Length: 178
Image (cartoon, rainbow, N blue to C red):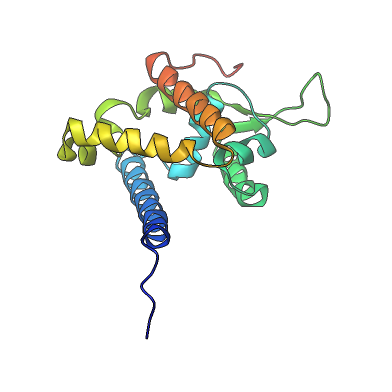
């Protein structure tokens, strides 16, 4: 005799799997977009350029922002450096820090191919849902995030990233000195 699963536990598991599926689909779409536009970067690499477009960051800062282990990002950063998109520089105020800076090549690529408006991977599926259902989904996802133990910090970080990405589209960076 099997005991029926707790619907909340089952729902949590399904939601986690749906979020992973959604993330994978978005990364595939990002990779497809980049390849179609002749940009030899992965979605993660492009996302790192977008993150660095606001200010230089160290590998450990990027690790925190992307919620990935630094060892996972080392080959990603090495590839970006090898392709001429980023360079490591010493921090004049703290010689132990080596923040990553965008090169002119990266700034040009971001200015030409930043994902805004219709190119955002979720625009088509959200449009298909309709604005009312899409708005409801967004509200429910926010509510879910606010229930997490570290909600305040996570939501603050998410809002900063959202602001960073949306401000990038309005006014692309113009110098690698940023």
